[in-house]
Amino acid sequence: MTRPTGERGSSLLLFPAAVLVMIVLGAIAVDFSIAFLGERELAGATAAAANDAAARAVSNRDFYREGVVVLDLATAREVATEVVRASLDRERYHDVRVTVTLAPAGRAVVVSASAEVDYLFARGLVGAPGRAHVAATSSASLRSA
Image (cartoon, rainbow, N blue to C red; front, side):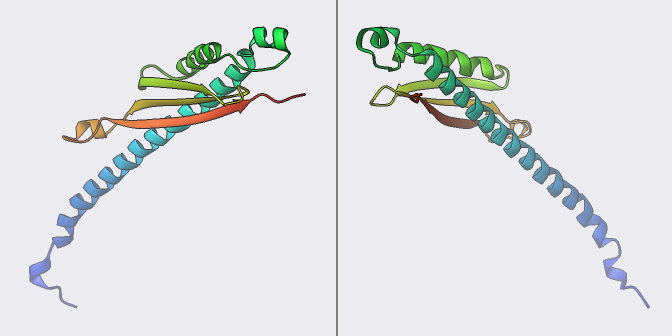
């Protein structure tokens, strides 16, 4: 069996290109997993904030005067913002914004939050975004016993 003389070593030229492609694909996978993890951590923080706000923001004035259980919006905002900010790492999450609203009946709280999470590898590329925008929304409602 004889080997063609003009194709000697041509596969050696493809190997560095294949390694480069694999490194780029690995970097993309790592950056997307960082963004996904950031979104999941933010979702956990908003769920905890909604539960804490629903538990701690019951309006004492309305309960003792009128006998109804409703949430106080100012207390719910304060509690939810404090819980979200305490749950997130300040070095990884930037520009954290928390929005708290109450359901029309005043018996449910909805916590929405958005933030920016730093990529690891994309920061080194010219023109690529250095951060991913993540957002999450959670709600909690009061139940009668």
